[in-house]
Length: 176
Image 1 (tube, one colour):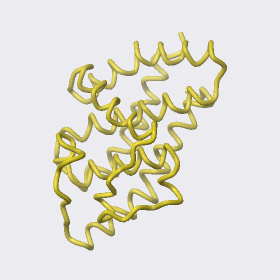
Image 2: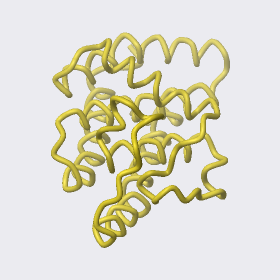
Image 3: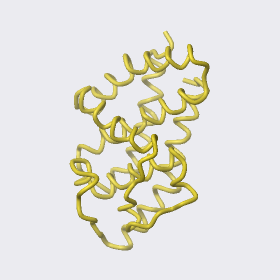
Image 4: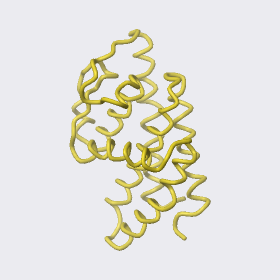
């Protein structure tokens, strides 16, 4: 089996690493499903873009059969919710522009042109303002304390983004 218990353990480690950086900024319990869904979409993106056609379909099928139900269990939600949130993050991989709410609406062109960057920026928006989980495209922009905002931006840049990219790298290399 390609995705077995060690794959679950690796997913859980990546999830918990990201969660430890995110939880100080929000106490919304829905954020756990956001972390899991974004992580799965990054895994999928990495697998899809680095393997031959037969391997990528096999890996993606195994991920759907093992990691998605495991993520639902880990986050105390259901598979349908995880898949719905994966669909949301998939929009950004496919080219939708994030709102940059967490960055007060300021685009970061050098990274926002990258599919991974767009996904991570959308994730940051949702963490920054969890009202966006329910209505990402039409919620008003929330402005929080500027110092808390600067701390959040620094955490996203220095801790969360590298944790996401390392997790995706493991998926690409099948080092899990």
